Image (tube, rainbow, N blue to C red):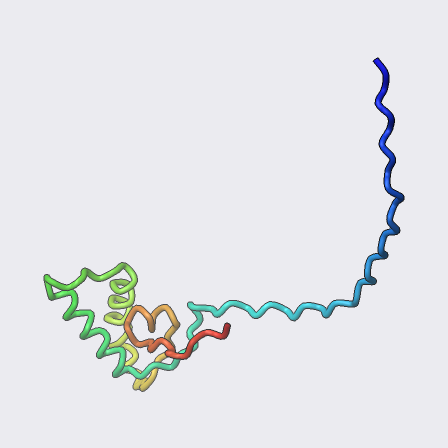
Length: 115
């Protein structure tokens, strides 16, 4: 068997040089996540009392949703600690974001996120 004649290759094209890399800006340090359990909000005691009353009504109503574990935890926490805060004459008490959300004290922002 005879070999087929070799195909002629096209001459090699000169390769373009890669563009020089430009210096990139160093990344800004990442913003730390918001600590949901840090006591950063000053909440008036009257608002906490109103929230506790709402939880009591929800617990007493057989047609309402049962209390969640978080609601039960914060309800019991404030049933124990509220008399002490009143005895000391406190007008506001420090609360955390989770606590405010569970007790219904947190008004979610209506402002949209940046895109």
